[in-house]
Image 1 (cartoon, rainbow, N blue to C red):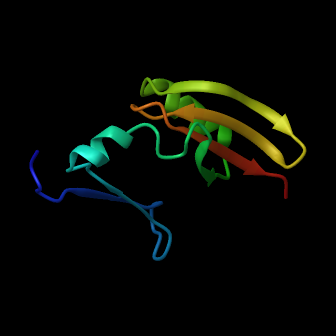
Image 2 (tube, rainbow, N blue to C red):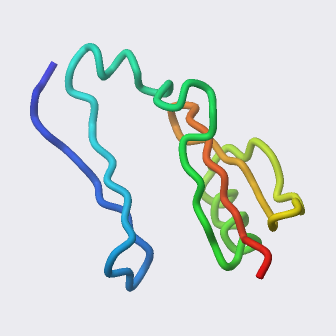
Length: 95
């Protein structure tokens, strides 16, 4: 395994404070955990102000939609999966 560090920083357009840092697994122990970081639970909750537009964008890019979008008591929600099977909630909260 290469121990070369690699990462991607993801942030909303124009953001000066909110970001997510994704790093590449480099050791055998890390590789064994890829796709299992949240032990089968949702790994992250992401908020949006336009879930319909984001849903269309996810579909257009071939992202696996697990559930939704659905109306829940706290807003509209959809669950999607990354390339490794981790699940994410995308939430457009009720205002």
